[in-house]
Length: 396
Image (cartoon, rainbow, N blue to C red):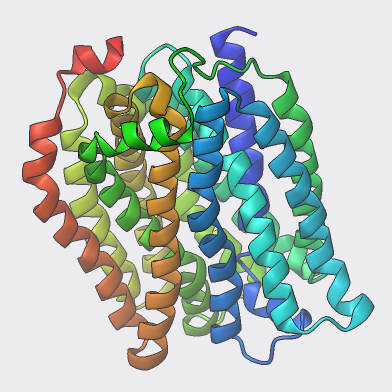
């Protein structure tokens, strides 16, 4: 296939993985009750945390194996196929054999460990393509945003039909991913490989990757925060149904999806610093504003603005990973980015859920948004030292 065709298929893979994931969010409190949980906030928190805990553990494993073996597609197809089976088991087993909720969480961990192979390595394969890192990461960003934008309202409507239906649809989507991955040309670099130790050692020689990793962490922290706290905030504060909550989440994800590609191309032209730092500061401020909104209309407007600003910074952050990583380290480098991102998502779920439970939703939004602003200010000097001329970013 050509680079353009592969870019489209890989973006489709990422889209489907995220769509399957986000389908579960709008009615997660209703879902965990149907799977045997006895609480809403705590059980929802651990159901989401189990998946992202697995992301943290397994993203690096898949990245290192991929770089060391010089192959990507077998891990993507295999991970998606196993994930499809586990999504279906989560929906079916609790009712069939009276599986306790802790058993559901074990299945959720295994499903997350398989799913991250498809997500992280599809992003890595986009890094392997030519045409500019901003363009390739913009394609990843628009796929992520589109999957989450559609997943939120679609998941809400599926919950209105049947509580476990989103899990079965997620299983079907994962099967589609497993098949689609087989049609992509595997361009993983194969020259100069010398085993797992050499791959990890090469990454250790690039500590500058810590800068985009830090921004990936905090950006995903707010995403995890919205997945749990934002969902329950809209449900409880404004008394929205799962379907209406899905629409509220889509107000963020729609502009986040539509604007990622053009903003990714923009970062190739003007560099990464302005989109990352300016975007992070404004993003944090808008997150804080959503939590203080007096009406659902104002909260919805804040979600739209948050999506636009998120689209500005996200592809530039991912492209910075591509700028800094060596060709034979890309799988491990992107895995590292996804590890930090998954830790951030996990932190957003756990910290956000804890703060909201103790101090209430407005304080939780202030903590999440304020953390984003503080990190942007602290990381600015390091980011300025890393900034490449725009022409170098395009040429790479």
